[in-house]
Image (cartoon, rainbow, N blue to C red; front, side):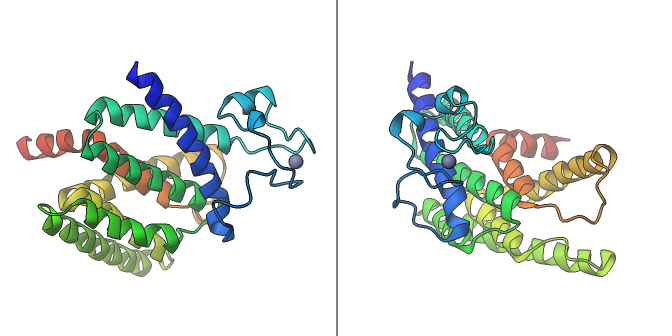
Length: 248
Ligand SMILES: [Zn+2]
């Protein structure tokens, strides 16, 4: 029964994540004004603002101007609800549940902003580094700081090597700050595995992109979604991967 409650709560939070994804890169306030259509500016009434249901009932178009509303709203609401249920199943209502829920939601927002704008906003990623260290208090602070610094240094090295080998910017400053945040939340083994997993996911997508979308290998692809997906996977499978690696 708790799962239903957690799922609905996740939908509502997902609705707020959508507001963050739209407004933070545009430097708009998160609280004011209330929800409005990005196309015509019409105020969205509460019954048209129910997660998932409203999107389906309105068939993804604005009631006022008939403009198409991005499928992203539906995807974010659904996945934030599913993510919260998965975290609840794993950690029940605990300190770790709170820590990883906040971390996962920040990753969501960062990933979708990067997909749309090709940026990782400092406004989210810098407080996230601080928050990761704060959540490690008092006993795991050393691990969090080492993870943040270690991730940062590793990614700077990879960025520099990438630039020398491929003569182009493969990783941006935002990606480097994001991996530092992952280090603060996941510690050193966590951040190393996150880097490997993100590269794996990125190359699978890269091959798919080149073969099926006829994209060029040089087109700019946001990297934060791969880091975010990797870090999210690590929350659930990290211990298993570490154990498997050290026993193998
Ligand atoms: Zn409209």
